[in-house]
Length: 335
Ligand SMILES: NC(=O)c1ccc[n+]([C@@H]2O[C@H](COP(=O)([O-])OP(=O)(O)OC[C@H]3O[C@@H](n4cnc5c(N)ncnc54)[C@H](OP(=O)(O)O)[C@@H]3O)[C@@H](O)[C@H]2O)c1
Image 1 (cartoon, protein in one colour):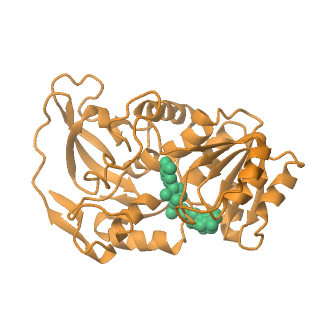
Image 2 (cartoon, helix red, strand yellow):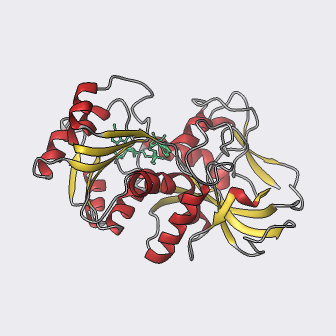
């Protein structure tokens, strides 16, 4: 079978399609999945470019979706032919977070899904949302579930809430779809007027260009009549957090998710204290939360926004496209 691998010295030019041994038949508690789709995340880009160290020969990509080809003994949840999607944390099944690193995350600490077949514990997958193709399903593993957890699980978002989203990448566009589905009102930023127009077409109420308006926190606050937003999905990190604190309401909630502007920096602690806001770090979510999200998607009929699709052997080009920042929503990989 074919697998895309990262050869040393790791970089996009060292992504190579190789023959690997077929994983064989599933043992007790395992399923064999024929993979057909994945999607790119900022995290995968870090691994593929060598920014995030990984093992030589690693098979990249955290997201994976496909069809169950065989089930091992004792597996009752899945049957041959089921469409399934992978879990970002294969060992975090339910309850409070139990993992604080990427040691067991596919495509980072262990091999990922840029390959034809895997045999893994059934508990490393959930059913895919109904009628989603493999690329669409794969977008929930990382970006979709992160947006779901930030807004629904940790944020306890309700109809009428106001939400601030930063940029128009995979997490933010999933968050836009979930927030509008739940009856919230959304402000979103972007570096592109064209992308802001597109976000308005998807239901965003207030849009602004973060390059043209560096003081966007105050502008978002003004949009709420001075009250501030209930939730911020903070994908920027140190370069955006001060503006997010400016934008949040007293007693509001900031989900600290991203590192787009770096991994460390100054936090205006007094301003955060004054807001009495909850600043919560999070990494994706549990398998139970993914099952809850799939149920919600089955009931809602919304589908993820796939900006472009690339073949598996064009993976390096797909990452280069992600680096260019041209995308809106998710970049899909299919095979
Ligand atoms: N903690 C977690 O569980 C978790 C899960 C998923 C992702 N993340 C993190 O969340 C971030 C986004 O991930 P992603 O996969 O959605 O990335 P992505 O799809 O590659 O999105 C990148 C987009 O972010 C926007 N952006 C870049 N710099 C920005 C800035 N200074 N201010 C506002 N927006 C900016 C740009 O949007 P425009 O083109 O519209 O300007 C860009 O297209 C990354 O840092 C990633 O590591 C964390």
